[in-house]
Figure 1 (cartoon, one colour):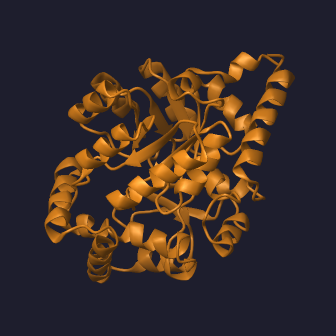
Figure 2: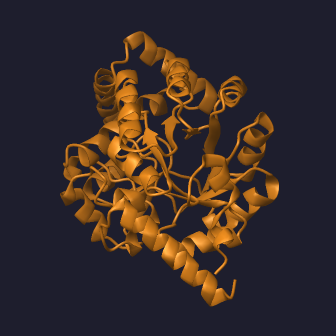
Figure 3: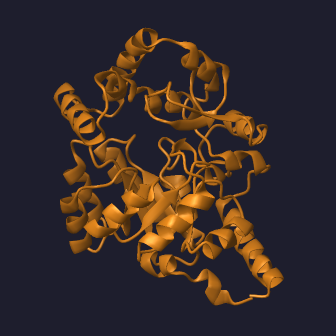
Length: 352
């Protein structure tokens, strides 16, 4: 096996041993999971969208106490205090800033000037072309198999299109769980893989065990892509609550979503003024209706109910379809070692 096959441009760009990224999952990717991933040779990413700015600062410093290896922070480009958060990650020497949506040209330039790697997630070739033109350093191309908010193009079709369209490193996401998947992504031209659900289902994840067991008991056919949670396509485990949301009318969902918006505001210490400003930015940038805007608060609160409070009966369970082929809860270190070993064996079998 040629060891160089796993030493991709992503490894050099991030300063990591393996081209494996743990994505910034809200309520899941905190300091413990992020530091475990980075310490094991991958790139861990803190999910900051569900954190206050002080909580993010605490999480960053906790990761730095646990490992000296590079890590990242996932940001929402439309947050009212985005500039303050960028100041924080620059000041703390964070290696990577990832985004679920494309950051502005000014934000990209500011991060690049400070030496921070900028990496948005995209779901279409044209989006990859746009952000590459704006100067991002890498992209995560997430196919339809991915968990949470996702697109409609399967990974096997999206990834080659994106790789052909841009010259920057591309990380493949959506359905990846093991070393064979890593080699498949490299064969398609990617520079590594980004995984969420596989890292959620580890011992280092703080998700309650009762919730993890629900994931382990499900098959690849037990997910659904629904717009009923927040108005955008989101892949989740199909549950009675999800079916109930699907059946409910807009008039029924709207007041519940409004209550969620106000509750989320309290949790994140967001003023009503900033909440309104953030909402207007979302509406302008994403071309959504007022109803969708209010519904958007449903998602983080329903995820928190499951992932933090351990109450899946009143929450939602975002997941990639790869959930159905996961059957255990290793530590992150064990997981990465297994993925690398399986990738090496796959290359040997192929005669590479």
